[in-house]
Amino acid sequence: MKLIPTAGIMALSLGACVQTGEVTEPTVERISFAVEPCFGFCPDFNLTLDASGEGVFEGENFVAKRGTRNFSASAAEFTAFRERLAPFRPVQSVSYGYDNCDGAVATDMPSVRVTWHDSDGTSTRLDWYMGCFQPGLHDRSDEIYRAWEELPISELVGADEDRASFRPS
Image (cartoon, rainbow, N blue to C red; front, side, top):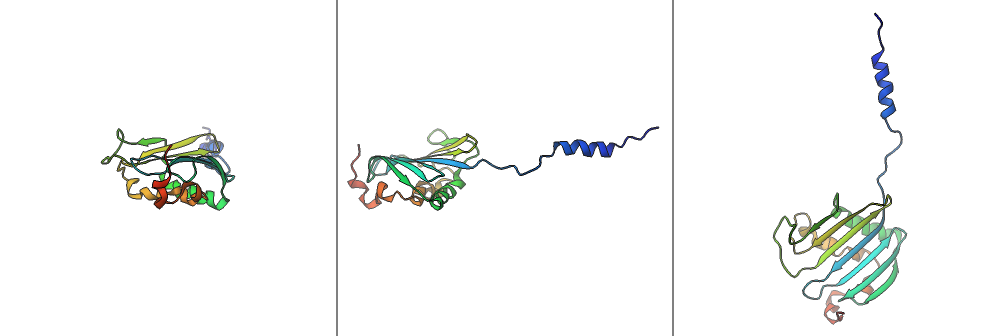
């Protein structure tokens, strides 16, 4: 009777399945961020910021500067912006609003839209109508709604106390 060294063969077989080196997650190359109008004087703008620090701001209504403006952010500002938004990134793209909300829904609120664009070419999007009292979002609404404050665009957005004087389009 021949003994087959099965343990050794199995170890070699399993070794062929093991990947060496680290598996890295794709990195965020660009973030698109928008706050959209409410029934009132909420700022209405969108921006896109690359990891390189190059950004484009597009002011619509109730902002100090309307139209398209370029801006630059430091690496620290991009990192702060990315990290402030990170807890809100869903596993897959999702939209919360009147038709998809796990809480009560109020009217006349603004919306936030964030898209994370990764180095592997994929993107993940969060659309949130802030009148949706979505658990995990509603109780931290200012953290996401005001995430733009991590960036050097306050002169473009303007101060809250001046919002009513910024004319809509």
